[in-house]
Length: 264
Image 1 (spheres, rainbow, N blue to C red):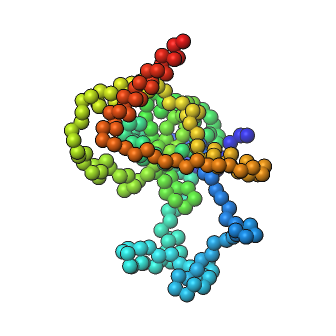
Image 2: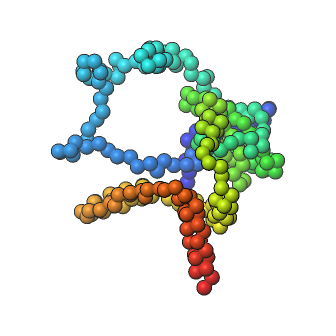
Image 3: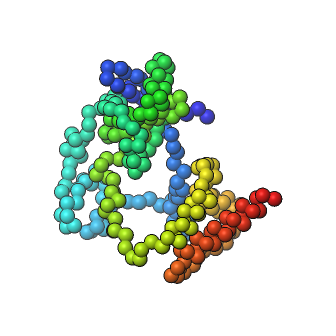
C-alpha cells in the first residue's frame, strides 16, 4: 500500500522554496488494550471526578493548572494558552548546515520522510547535495499548533526530517555519579575487549523484534481459538563477587565452541 502524506510544507533555504509532503517513517506497534467490566465484559469508560466531593465533572467545567511547587498550582485559561501558540505556517526553514556527528543520538526523536510536491529536480538536487557534502540541515517549522526543531538529512535519493529534542531535555553524562570502587582489572578489560571483537558485526534490524508484543499476540490468538497458555516466570540468578570475570570467560568459551562447530 502506497504511503499517504500526513502534512504539506515548503522547505525554505535562503530564497529557494521547495514544496514537499511529509510521510511518517515509523509506525506505532505498541500493544493497546480495551478495559472491560469483569462480570459482564461491557466496555468501561474513564470519567473526570472531583477529588474532594467524588462527583463527576464535565469537560466544560475543567481548567488547566501548572504545578510550581508541591502544594501550589497556577490556574491557566485556555484563551491565554491559545495566544501563546505559534503562528500557523507551512515553512520548514533551514537555518544552517552542520556535520552529522554534531547531533548526538540523544537529540533524535521521530523520523519523517519528505517527498516532492511539485518539480522533482530541485528536490533530488538538494538530497544529492547533502549526500555529497555530508551535511545535515537544522530545520524549524510549525505543525499542528506546535513549533519543532529538526534535522534535514538525505536517505538514499530521498530526504528525511527528524524532530530533535531541545537542549533542556537532554541529560548530560556528567550528571551521573562518578565511577567508584576497586580499580579496573587488566585481565577483565582484556577479556571484555576479546568479547567485543568476537561479537563484532553489522547491525541487521530484521534479526530483532518486540518479544513482548509477539508473546501477547500469540496469547491472543491462542485464547481466541479457545486454548490456554502457561507462562513461565523469569527468575534472575543471584550474582556473586568475581561474577564478571567468570561470565566473560564463559562467554568467550561459548563463542569459541560455536565458531569451531561452524567450521565443520
